[in-house]
Amino acid sequence: MQNKGLSRRGFLTGLFLRRGAGGLEAARPGRAAVAELALARGAATERVMGSRTGGSGADLESPARADPVSGSGEQPGPSLLVQLLADSAALARPRPPAPPAPPASSFLSALLGLPTLPDKVANFPAPPVLRPPGAVQEDAFLAGCTRCGECLSACPHGAIVLAPARLRDAAGTPMIDPSRAPCWMCSDTPCITSCTPGVLTRAVPLKLGEARIQPHNCLSWQRSFCTVCVERCPVPGAIAQEGGRPRVVAEICTGCGVCQHVCPAPVNAVMILPAKARPLPHGATT
Image (cartoon, rainbow, N blue to C red):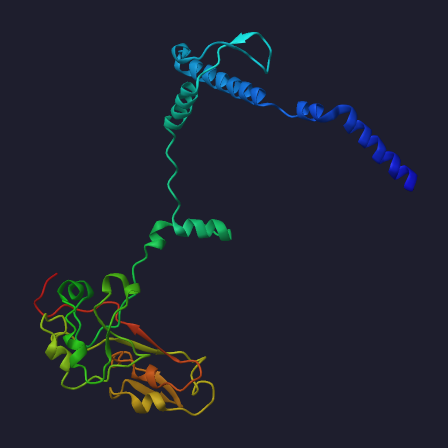
C-alpha cells in the first residue's frame, strides 16, 4: 500500500514538473480571452436590439473584431456605450400591469381551501346594538346622536358605555353591555333627561330588547333550584316562574340585562336580544 502511494505521488510530481508553471497559467483564461468574450456578448445584445428597433447601431460601434466564440470572421464589436444603451432600453420597455391583489378573504379562502365568500356576505351589516332606554329608531339615533357622552355621565350605575369600533357605524355611540353592567331601569331616567339631541326620549317605549333563557344552561331547567333572575329583575312580572322554572314574558320584558348579569349558572343561561326595530317619537318622520 505504501509503494502504491509513493508511485501516485511520484506520478503527480512528474506531471507538474513536465507541465511547469507556464502550463498551469495556460490552463487559466487570460485577461484577453475574458475581454473578447465580453465583447462577443455585447455584439449579440446589439444584434438583438437592432433587430427589434430596425437599426444596427453601427454609428456607435467600435472597430470590427474577430468573434472568438464562433470564429466566423470579422464581427462588429459594440462599445460600452452601446451595451449600456441596450440595457437601458430593456429596462425602459413597458411592462404589463400587475393583476390586482385579491382581498384578504379570498387569500385566506385559497390558503385554507375554502370557497370564497360573496361580497354581500363580507359586507353583512353590523349586528343590532342594545341602546339605553328611550332610544329612537336606529337610523334617526345615528343621525342625531352627537356622541357627547352626557348620558354616560348621568347614569348612576355606570351601565352606559361607548360602542366599540367593531360595531362600525355605531362606534362611539352609547350602548348597554349587560355582561359588564346592566341597565337598572331608573324611574327618573337620568340618561333621557341628559340627552340634549333628543335621541333618548320618553316619547317611545322604554324597551331595550328582550331576554331569552336557554334551558340547556339554566340551573332550574336542569333540575336544580335557582330563582336569582326572578328575584333580581327590576321590572315586575317580566320573568314568571312556572313549575320552578323561569319564563320570560316578552310583552313586559324591557331587555335591561339584569337577569343575564346576575345569572349564577356555570355557562350563562340568559341571552339578551337587542330590539330589531324601535319607533320614532310621535309625529316625527325620517
